Figure (tube, rainbow, N blue to C red):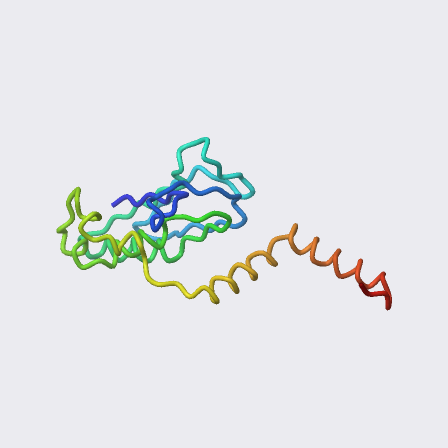
Length: 157
C-alpha cells in the first residue's frame, strides 16, 4: 500500500501547513520504502503540492502490509511542520480499514479519524517549548537575552 505524508492539518479540514524541515528520519526495513521530495532545512510552503513523502509497503498478506505500514508511520520523523502522520496512523488502526470496508465516503462517515483525539493543551505547550529550545536560532536568542540581563548588573525597572 501507499501512504502519502502531507504537510496538512486533517483536524482543520486538511488545510495545508507550512514550516521548515528541522529533522527528518525515514523508516527502513523489509517491505518498506520511502520516496521523499524534501530535504533537511527545506522550507515547506503553500506554493507547491503539500505531499512530502510516500511510504510504500508490501507484505504477503493484507495484515502483514498493514503491520509494516503502522511500524513505518510510527518511525517516520519529520519535525518543522504539521503533517498528516497521526491521521494515517489512525486510519491504519481503524477496524473498518483493517476489514477492508473503506469506500469514497468512509471519512465523511467517520469524522473522528480526521479529527483525532482530545489533546491536552498543557502537554502541547511543553512539547512546543522543548521543540523551540531544540532549534539553534531560538537557543541563540534565549542565551543572548540572558547575557544582556546579566550585563545590567543590579539595575532593574
